[in-house]
Image (cartoon, rainbow, N blue to C red; front, side):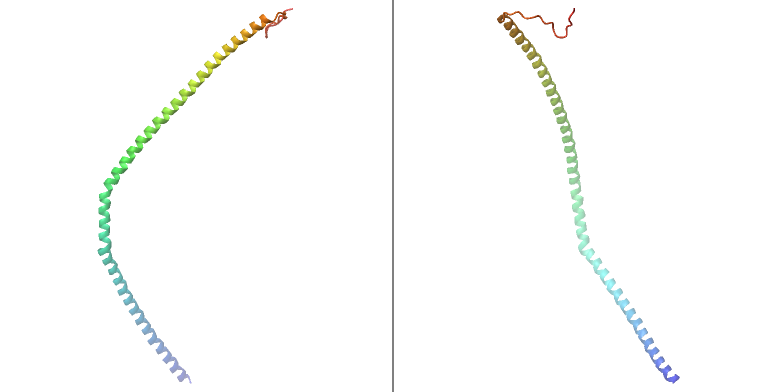
Length: 153
């Protein structure tokens, strides 16, 4: 019995060895074909790059080289105009502030002159009114000292 069971075991071990060898061969073949596919894809990518991408890149670089001086000139003009606009804006702002200050100063002077003349006119009108009242009234009024004067006793 021991012999029969070893034969079966040996047979199974032989089958497993053959299957392992076949698996190793299949793996080696898969690796070989995978490498060939990888090399083939890299070659196609290289061809596409040489035939399609390189000419486009060279054209784009030529356009960029052609446009760059014009763009730089435009940027220089924009900087110049921006500087002038900033300067003029500052000048206008300064002029506006000066003008507003002068208008405020003039308005203050006019207000003071009007108040001065109006107070003189009010004083004259009060004086005339007092004179007319004193001519029209015949009654004697008691003499009042001016406000702020002290009475002597």
